[in-house]
Length: 255
Image (cartoon, rainbow, N blue to C red):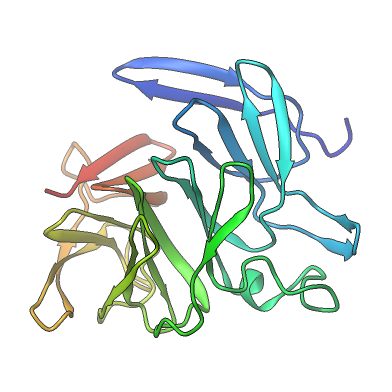
């Protein structure tokens, strides 16, 4: 059992809480999401390459109905991971997953996430990656938001908003923001988290201008009692921006 950890997933839906126990796994600080058919996906952010036949399979697809757990490779340096309505897995990578570390690229093969954003099938096969001639380069995928069958990212160094359609068509819009790690979006507006060094309650609301630039105004994220949002993790999914903190889980919705 050395190095193995036990995980329990709590899922709330319409006030009902479902508890799912997973088998012991050798994954630390996993990213987690659920497939449309009820299977679970966990992926450790780090992944070592030690040799051609010796590397970590840092993803686990778990079926709670059968207890089967299948291992898959997502590579090192995962910044975020979300599953779309078609069961495809979208994975964003930070700089070490793009340029190489933990054996990947130095001296091993090219990093799995060298494109910065990769779409995998439900069984872990790479089916698309961000094209290197798309215009904006990805040195670090700061934020990922998957809704329906589309994915949207906010990435370093130029920090555009890039939308990838269900059939992998790419469009991008310019912003003047820097360092936002989460966002939620509707057809009309985008709600960004704070920039570098902003307090945790700072946010930005953006609207598209005619020339393709996202124009923003500063806003404030408030808790139900009217106080400013305390420190915690933010996660965007579709129109919803979730706050996870010691005080609980809250969400803001973009109209």
